[in-house]
Length: 318
Ligand code: GDP
Image 1 (cartoon, rainbow, N blue to C red):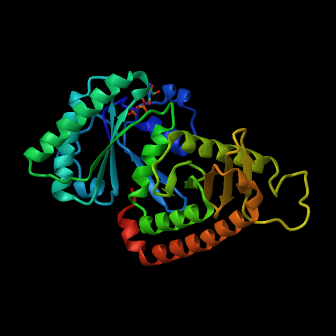
Image 2 (cartoon, rainbow, N blue to C red):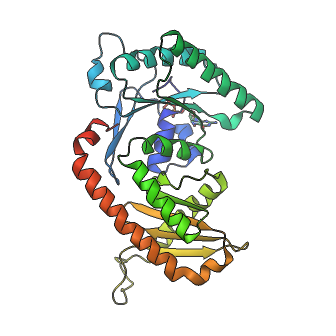
Image 3 (cartoon, protein in one colour):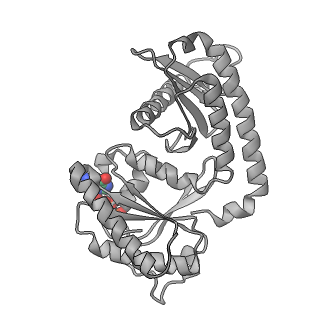
């Protein structure tokens, strides 16, 4: 949600449909609610709401709109006058808090690529202040509202969407614990579990996220996807040479001896790790074996949480 031209459709197209950011200039304005189904490691929908409508007027059925939401992403154009958007957001938060307190409110302070560092920080603080004042006046001290600085011209929007989706995953802490154990035992500096199609990460180890590291891993997925397409099994001309392993595995050693290690976990997910230890390349067999053990654990977690959590998941679909 958010005002017209704030960047909602652009974000959905760039993150979920690989649209190059420059092409969003030609997107048409949304006039009705657009529902986009994403089938991946978990099925969910992204709804794009036209900006100018007041959803709390009696013409709209609140239950239809908010009843099945897991997260509400509100996009604010930080390059424009944002007071109207913040006022509407405040009204929305108060209603959502009253009737649907379980919905996470995710505020994207968007298009920050055009702002200086100083102006960016001021804008962020001003918006957070205006919203928290309104919330505390209404008696909501711990409302689930989170803020992100985003732009489609860098990785920030992927990082922000990763955080939004992570909060909707059942058993996220189990996944993080498993990744922590793997990363500690193998000496990985950082490990991400990526959704290959959107390149949002659904979990990582709990060390701080380093943007450069994330970019490197994300770019490496592109390289592997391109190469896999070139040499895929069902290539019309080339024949496969005997049995092949199901999932792609790959690593590269960079000029500073950093190794990036990638292993597909299943149809949708792949594990990408950054290893700074120069001896790592001689221990590939051990690293692969540990990643396979992680893969077994991961598939077990998913089969259990999906079995036991199907109703919770249906309730958290958007
Ligand atoms: P919507 O009406 O909220 O869906 O807005 P659109 O997605 O149609 O975007 C409106 C305009 O904002 C388009 O021209 C986009 O190219 C532009 N835009 C979207 N995201 C960004 C961003 O991160 N930075 C900049 N500079 N422009 C953006």
